[in-house]
Amino acid sequence: MNRSPFSGIDSLKLTFNHIKIWYTSGMGFFTDAYDLFIIGAIIDIFKAYNLPGFQLNSFYEGILASSAIITAVLGQIIFGILGDKIGRKKVYGVEASLLSAGAFLSAFSPNLLWLIIFRMIMGVGIGGDYPISATIMSEYANVKDRGKLIALVFANQGIGTLVAVAVGAISAYTLPPDIAWRVMAGVGAIPAATVIYLRRKVPETPRYAALVKGDLKEAEKSASFLGAKLNLSKIEVKKMSFSEFLDKYWKLLIGTAGTWLILDMAYYGTGIYSGPIVSSILGQPSSVGQEIVFAGIPFMVGFFGYFTAVALMDKLGRKVIQIQGFVMMAIIYLIVSAVMIVTYTSKGPKVSGFLIPAEAAFVLYALSFFFIDFGPNTTTFVIPAEVYPTSYRTTGHGISAAAGKVGAAITTYLFPTLLTIMGLKELLIMLSLLSILGAVITIVFVKEPKMKSLEELTGELKGEEEEKA
Image (cartoon, rainbow, N blue to C red; front, side):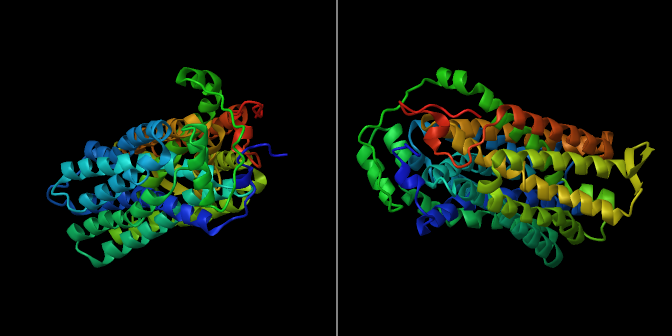
């Protein structure tokens, strides 16, 4: 029996306002995924055409690719803390404004330095969107559909990726290169800009209003946004300091932050440099447009993974999906590396052939993106929005997401160098070992939130015993 005073929300059927919150929350992730793919396409154009003011060497290529990722770490930490200190509503919309402004200004960059600066602004907004949007969706969701709804917010990444492939390819094929890359960069501003006003109008979540602010009237009013009634007359909260939070939740933080770090090392490395990796498998494409299309195919395969995760999140559970995703990533990386024939040259190891048809190796490699998205890419976003107490929920999510972006920044910056020194075969073996480690950390340190109220999971109410993992 659900004893939570928020059972009025937890037991609701899916409503139109749930969908409205999903759309409002999801557009930031559309832009995040759009940017992940499109910066690779922009780098392809810079390298192919050597545009004045935008010439790249390996150092600047790494900085440009990782600039938004590096500042996303700051956004995740800052907005995660602010979301708990001053409320979800007060900062909601600010991060979308930064994200949209950074993307828009990127399109008008006069040179490489300004492009990096504007992408850093965009990165702060992208980072800030993670803890706030995930937590708002979590705290408004009903128990039965909570995993599905949070995963749907994140699944906007799949849509953003498809749009990025389309915009990138069409721009590269139809526009002069100095215009094409600017169109690619600027389109990313549009989705986030459409929800800034809507975000400012979303009420404070009932849980934050009641459990952190202690404003029961605001909590009742917020619940009415969904048509729910609350039972808050005897609510008592267990207060804790930040040191107490860390003392109680450090193992769980290892689970949510550690797995996200490992996931993003694989996802952002193979994602941003999808073009060079695919070219290593299929051979050099005939044009930049063709390279963008080929690089986008693994993302198209991954698109179906997002929505498979959505469909099964509340049936299989988060842990099962995360573990099988990591295991399948490890298996696929190992198989693809095993069938590679590598030639060692003065410029480093090069893929010279495969023990199976190259097209079959490419299909296998692309399948890894399905299991990334029907796996830890989705679940590492969902779980931290559920397992931490209300007073530290955006902080816990922000720390976890920041760990992911640290991993992403490391591999994004190092990938061009590692591809040259180690070669693709050794890189895939390394990513396989990391994926196995991700599965082990999930088993040991992550708890299953499926079909439990947030208060059951956290034990933050007096009289509630915290559920064990």
